Length: 427
Image (cartoon, rainbow, N blue to C red; front, top):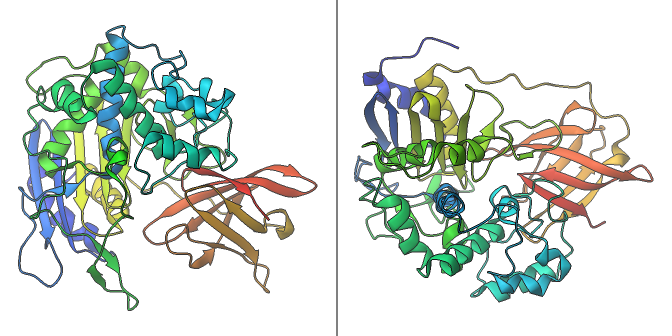
């Protein structure tokens, strides 16, 4: 660990972190005994509107932390059991047969439900689960980690059934209002930071950061917007179970349950060693530190025991990588070294097409023996870098991810775990 810069140098931290990234705009808040915020760039490329402390950004999947907190509050109140099947409360799960009947609250919170991931225009939970039912699940309930937006749609419905409120009102009553989060809105405001994508020439142009989905995916991250300062306060409250003015959101035993490892990521993970209940547990960092990402544009980091929270909200595809650089610069952390193996021997073990309902990738061998994989974001090819055994990594620019092959049959991998999802071989 390097020496931590003084908090007043946060503007300089952002400038250093921006080097090497295609940056449109970003707003950052660091809570560490004091609250310090800084911004860089513009709300929309080609305009003169600078990002400021009141700029609203989409939180994306950071929303899942808030939904998980509401669910765990219901558990703490004795209104819900972590290990009881939830199909009695969410009968739509019965469309999946025995698989749906086996799914528990803990599985949904820790992404071990086996529900096929989706991010689409499904207008109802029945329609969404019907899509999932039509495709073979990559994992059985409780078998292992595979990130699922679908699972958090189900959790949103579970909250509604138990509270009699919409999931939005339940979140506002249980978390946002007690924590004093005043900037949060659940529709995209006209003055929110505009999204950007990389154009063919490598420069940023206005465009949707994520594919458009129906409001059904609100609990998974489709609708919530907030400022960086409110986001930092929000995630700190969720990770400690207490608001800044001392009010209890969750009892200590429930916080401990949320922050412990429930679902390890297979193979050799790069960023997260696994998931707690709602939270990602980073590979490196202090004990009981937790994180989450929103697409690839938002990043939060919390050290609950030390009262530290960092929120990095951006409007460009490399926001997660930028956020990690901000974390390392602001808190003096070193990036973990990436292991590198001698290279794969028998490439036929890995070559093939792998898919889930959310996306697919193709792995092929180049003439010089290198292994190449297509990006789940763009479809473009990049190198697979061998780490050890059947574990690789791939750098897709906005997404650097582990690529772990498993379930070998007749010398060929049957499944692949990448971009936090489990995929099955389809050819």
